[in-house]
Image 1 (cartoon, helix red, strand yellow):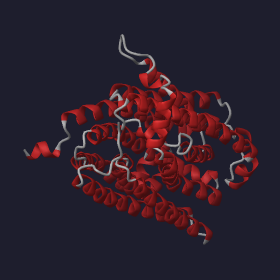
Image 2 (cartoon, rainbow, N blue to C red; image 1 turned 60 degrees about the vertical axis):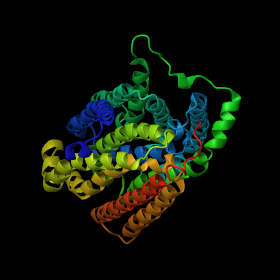
Image 3 (cartoon, rainbow, N blue to C red; image 1 turned 180 degrees about the horizontal axis):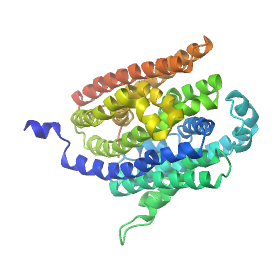
Image 4 (cartoon, one colour; image 1 turned 90 degrees about the horizontal axis):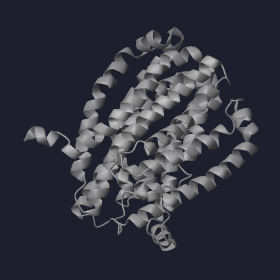
Length: 438
């Protein structure tokens, strides 16, 4: 009996297994390729990657206006299809505007972030942003349909396509840092295409959610889920700003070469944590959608998910803290030992991120976007303020990273507490705070 309580239910285990199998295949190749890439590219190239990743992630958090986040909620397929098309239209329009802004401000961006490559490669920002948007939108349709096998294929293809592009460009010595910076967009685009084509015999090449619904459905969907662009989008933006803007601040203060070591740390730690957390979150989000539509209790599902993720992260956390610098110098080369020291500092932060992020989406699904917004705003202000203060006072990059990791860890703990309180109140009311999902 006790064992059953501590394990995930069969459906959750099978869904997570399918998604995580693809995540391990895709993310595993990214991590395993890193020793080769550190010999094909220099620290400044990895620093350039960090700049593009941060700027694109910030843009990617906004361009869909978060319409896709609610695709799992409505009972009506017509409303779900409307949300998909609203997200696509928003992504196309806003990415086009972003491209214009990036071109007009390319010299300013290059100067501000000490990244001269942006004068030439400014177009990487809108291209990566639209790739992120398409990735998110298609993922939402797969999650609603509980197509966990396709989600796994998508995760695997993202990593393999990205690494293949990185290596081929590096071996050919084409474009300098371009082989790294464009790889993120290439990986996501190939992942979407591969998931679409990986269908069962007799299945649909294009999901039903791609058919254009009647105009009335658009009106109903946009009215019912209007809080997504009005509130949730800003919360998502603040969330990403809290994660990515500190890297941009550090780059402006210390230069792309120094940030290159941080970028390798993020590649080895943050990338797998992000993909595994996202894979788990997509299944949990689909399960939450079912529970919410059925007015079921959601607390037990979140508790089990948190417990299992905590067990998963314990061994890697201890290993990084104990042997991070030695492992990095042995695997990537002695010149990358500094990245191992940074990994030791960031280890706890990323462990907490893996546990908290997959369950944090519940705040949007139970109509508590304002709680998420308040936390995101607080985190962004505190984190950016702390990092800016250290750099303005002339502190070393190591000092700035210690402060950054400490503040982020505290904020993740605070978010977990907020989630538990909010979900407990939701379950006591029997889901009465959730809007109509017809």
